[in-house]
Image (cartoon, rainbow, N blue to C red; front, side, top):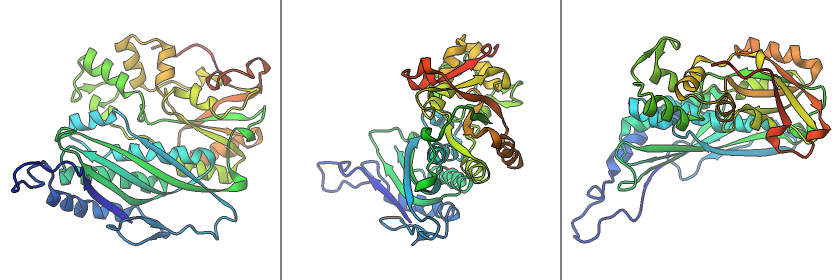
Amino acid sequence: MSEDLSTDSNADAAGSSSATYADAGVSIDAGDEAVGLMRPWAERATRPEVLGSLGGFAGLFQLPLDRWSEPVLASATDGVGTKIAISQALDKHDTVGIDLVAMVADDLVVCGAEPLFLQDYIAVGKVVPERISDLVKGISEGCVQAGCALLGGETAEHPGMMGSGEYDISANAVGAVEANAVLGPDRVRAGDVVIAMGSSGLHSNGYSLARHVLLDSARMPLSGHVEEFGRTLGEELLEPTRIYAKDCLAMAAEAQVRTFAHVTGGGLADNLGRVIPPGLTAVLDRASWTPDPVFRLIAQRGRIEAAEMERTFNMGVGMAAVVAAEDVDRALAVLTARHVPAWVLGEVSKQPSVEETEEGQRVLMRGDHPRF
């Protein structure tokens, strides 16, 4: 397991021979303290296949070949986006790490891959050990929820490029799936059913628009209580992204799952469209669910058209599964037992007229847009 704290090698001050790295804004001591504070969180998120301990130059993971006869490795990289601005404004940093894990682990599971390990990258203007520890605490919790190991990462201090209170985080995760069990558009058939899995809120997409509407235009304070939420605006906006990896794997083990679609940037139609093959169309029913109050608030305060809302936000659907029609009840039973809100969203049908259209047009949304 690796965990490094590095700095920009060009950050040394020129001139006086008495200048130190600290003069340039870099504290090696603070970096060492941060590594010490994050150690218990990194060690919490582990798996039996992890070799070594925190502090190595590289993370080691022994792939258990007895589990797969012909394993295919899957990899995903992502960040959290401008949701971090909310975390920084509230000085609360122990949840965005969960969002980070969700972004990569749930991309992996779309093809049926089990997330095995994750490595993070944290860039900061100034190392504040307690803040780094909080970030890693969230990442560790996310890894536990996803069932993967935190195999270390990198913390980089960039004085002069980022403010002392600024940071950004990203991660890469690796998973594995049996070659003959890879899920994808090639498995989808006419008559298959689309099952929706409810989101926990905005998740980690659309925050630039949400911040513009609620904070810049409407001037709503993050500390202000919002009756529809039953909590403050800041608490609602920092609600961690639901992680579906274990739930999806459990469903795939019990039912004929053709593929999944992780609903992130671009909304439900565009992301589901990525896994619907040419010649088929997923026909979805808007009346099958009601978007959470946070979406209504954004739409009303920003006077945003319904179509724009659907292109930007998940609108209450964080993951979708395409399953064989005969296994719908079984798939829903698995999700219910795992306390994941789920419902039948629509079905897949033949639509020759849209065979050559773009991915997003392979999804038809029936019924009126939500009335905000």
